[in-house]
Amino acid sequence: IIPTSPPRSNPNILVTGTPGTGKTTTAELIALATGLKKLTVGDLIKERNLHDGYDAEFDTFILNEDKVLDEMEDMMSDGGMCVDFHTCEMFPERWFDLIVVLRTTTENIYDRLEKRGYKQNKIEENLQCEIMQVVLEDALESYKPEIVMELSSNTVEEMEANVEKVLEFVQQFRQAH
Ligand code: ADP
Ligand code: MN
Image (cartoon, rainbow, N blue to C red; front, side):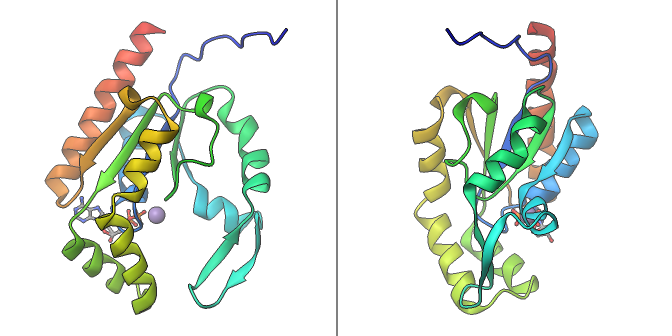
């Protein structure tokens, strides 16, 4: 018999989307507005070496999913986390109460990633990812569709509106739990 854990009083939220859609910036603002704790998984991977080395062609770390999941398990167990990462299907479904998928036009993604100094092949890969809606479809396959919130993130105004929507969700969650 697996004992059911007590329901959490604060939600765990995942902010996901193609690189350049604004996950880290949005997660930061959500954390400020709600008091949830921000966890940028990419930073955690680098800080704690949760990878299997470096892929020079794509200028990226090779993810070690088991190490990342082990490291995060304790942080997620009590709720209250606002996590940002560019994929979502590797996490256990039970971790999250809301999945925010940020969407951005290819023009804006291009500009943001070029400013970040990404190489052309990496920009191209990420543009394809956004055009094919890879992250949205992964989210809808991995979580209950009713907890997946697709939000447009092209302007600062949209970002502020997105933070407001998530704040409303958090307030409702807290009232219900
Ligand atoms: P991600 O974490 O998804 O890769 P970031 O949060 O690092 O994206 O944002 C990438 C860049 O785009 C940053 O310079 C950020 O200020 C800008 N940006 C992100 N979201 C928006 C938005 N909704 N409107 C305008 N600029 C944005
Ligand atoms: Mn980021």
